[in-house]
Amino acid sequence: MSISGSDRPAGAVTVWWARPLDPSVHPRLAALLDAHERERMAALRQAADRARYLAAHALTRIVLGEHLGVDPGAVRLDRTCRCGQQHGKPRLAERPESPGFSLTHSGNLVGVALGPGPVGIDVEQRRTLTSLDGLAEHVLSPAERADGGLDAHTFLITWTRKEALLKATGDGLSSPMDAITLSGPGEPPRVRAWDPPRAQAEDGEQRGPMWLADLSSPEPDHPAALAGFGAGAPTVTTVDGDAVLAG
Image (cartoon, rainbow, N blue to C red; front, side, top):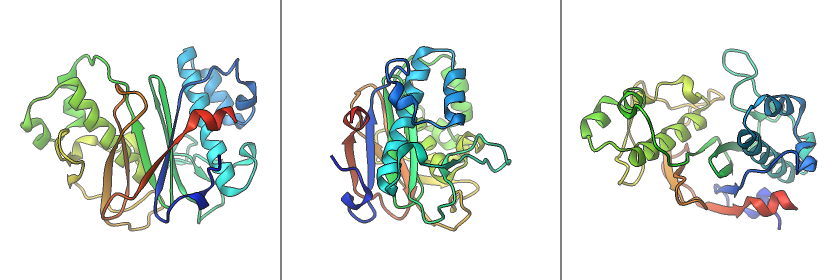
C-alpha cells in the first residue's frame, strides 16, 4: 500500500489511525525514533503512555519518510518552540516547502495527519471528568459557557476542536482556549470568534480563515477533530495506520 503524497488529491488531508504498540515487542519501530524521541519515551512512567508514544511517532516517521522518499529513521525534525526550547510542535528541519503534519494520541488510538499546509489533529478518549466546571472556566469562552448544557461528552468534542486549531497555528496550549468561541458540539464545526484573531500559522505567514472538521475515528468513544487554514475543509482521506506500522 502506497502512502506517498502523490496518491492524495491536491489540497487533500490524509489521516492515519493506529493502535498503541509496546516498545519492548516492537524494537524495529523503536529503532526509527531519534535520540530525543527515545529519551522522551523512556521517561514516561506508564507502559500505556510509552505504547501510545511509540505508535504515534513511528507512524509519523514512516508517513513522512515515504512522502519525502527517505528512510523513516533519517527524517530530521525540528522541535524549536517560540521560546527557543526543544518542546514545540515538531516540523521538518531545513525544508521550507515541507508538508504540514500533526500527531495525536489518547486512550486506544493514535492519529497522524498530513496535508499541503499546516494542519492540526486531536483525539480524546471519552472519560469521566472531575471538576468539569473548573475545566470549563479555562476551555470555554464566556459565550460558550452561557449556552449551558455542559457534560463530559460535549466538552470533549469542543476540546478536540480547539486543540486541533491550536495545533494548526503552532500555539498549542500556550494560547488560551477560552479566547475561541466555536459553534455548538451538535452543530457543524466552525470558528464563531477568536479574540484576538488568529490569522497566521506557526511560520508567521498570514493564512486567513481557518476550517474545522470532526473526524470519525475507529474507536467510537474517541471524539476527534482536524483543523487547518482556508475557507473550507478539504477532502479528508483515512488510511489504516496499523497496516502501515506492520509493514
